[in-house]
Length: 78
Image (tube, rainbow, N blue to C red; front, side):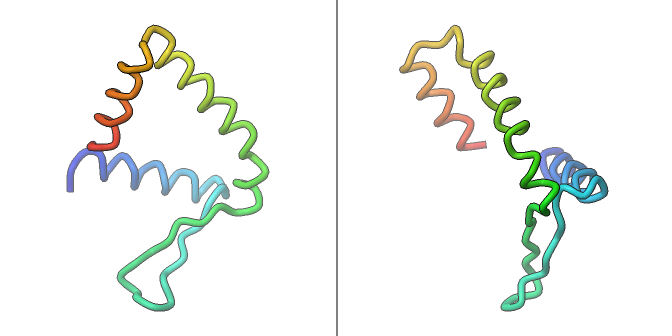
């Protein structure tokens, strides 16, 4: 397991404990677990979007359109 996987697991665990999401095991294949937003998580969506937009603004503010596209492509490869 790599560092990214560990970070995701820790984040999911914390959000689950706080009541923002829950894990659901697939009915078709028990090897799969789905992460589903709870009502509390859905109600918090506008706050998450505001934070996400602020972070994107900070990240992209000094980049050209071409640089932004390159960054997006690189991030998708990770």
